[in-house]
Amino acid sequence: MPGFTLRRLAPGDEAGLAEYIRVRTAVTPEVPESIEQAHWEDATYPGEVTRFLAEQDGRALGTGSTGRIWMNRVDYPRYWLGMWVLADARRRGIGTALYRATSEVARAAGKTGFQTEVSEAWVDGVRFLANRGFTVTGRSKMVQLRLRDLTPPPVTPPAGLRLTTLEAEPDLVAGAHRVAVEAFPDIPTSDEPVEPGTLEAFINRDVDRAGVPRDAFMLAVDEATGEVAGYANLILRPGSTTVAYHDMTAVRPAFRGRGIAAALKRATIAWAVEHGLEALETGNDERNAPMRAINRKLGYTPLPDELDLQGPLAPTP
Ligand SMILES: CC(C)(COP(=O)(O)OP(=O)(O)OC[C@H]1O[C@@H](n2cnc3c(N)ncnc32)[C@H](O)[C@@H]1OP(=O)(O)O)[C@@H](O)C(=O)NCCC(=O)NCCS
Image 1 (cartoon, protein in one colour):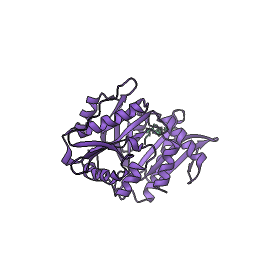
Image 2 (image 1 turned 180 degrees about the vertical axis):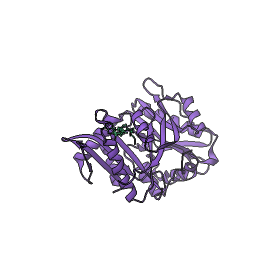
Image 3 (image 1 turned 45 degrees about the horizontal axis):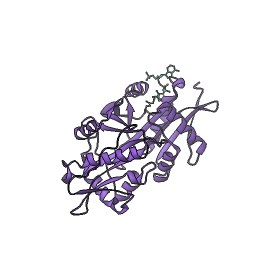
Image 4 (image 1 turned 120 degrees about the vertical axis):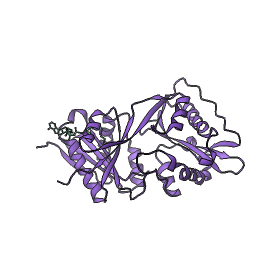
């Protein structure tokens, strides 16, 4: 007798969604989730995120989610996998039940495997996945910059460029998309390159997203041509107003080697200090030497590594 029940959250089940957020955030507080973020997902990608709740005696003990990975092409063969079980409810089969249920969803969508990211500090999760055939396909070096008492760094654009924001010049969004199209293929990944998508997909995913402040979406513009050379943006940690992640820092190949990425990043740091944030976090694939060097120079310090894992769907019962 498992003693718990598993149910799939129906669209609009706000009470269930609140429990999903609560359990998920309790299990991995360093990567919390918020109602706003979940609403944004459901509004932007209707029906593409499936969530489950494991309950016993009216208490939510675990939760899981799966769906399309928005940074990959639509027909990418793997779905995202997330599972969170409260520490005092582990080793009772809840994780296994969530893995089976999410696998059925992925299989029904024609997917053949899962992909996920797990902090190396989540020892139970790493072991659970390793025991089910998941392998580490990449490693991100996570870092943090504490902002309290930090003097905002000087923000000086390299010669021939000016810095602006998407809030000040919203029409530059197409230029930012062009940066993504040219730069995303160069981001080291453990599998297929990141897919920028169409302008509309880019705006939905990377601009009009919950927690992406437009006045912190920094753009470097070539003064001679008016073209966008690069951009850097932040995304607030779900549920937080004091911690943000660097979402992306990207420079078109023709403009590299001139200090544009560092200037853009300094502009986002200055924005964060001026807006009273306490910390900025980011992660880069361990092979991303240029970005890691910039982070080191700017004073970021290490957090536990994040592992990229890929693995099979649970076998059909
Ligand atoms: C990964 C995670 C979801 C697993 O949850 P769980 O409920 O403990 O999973 P299960 O109980 O099904 O399985 C855990 C282990 O307990 C064992 N187990 C299951 N029922 C058991 C029982 N009644 N008695 C003893 N052991 C049991 C399982 O066989 C498994 O061991 P194995 O990997 O050697 O086979 C949980 O550890 C977690 O939330 N970790 C933090 C977040 C995370 O890392 N998530 C993974 C990202 S996808």
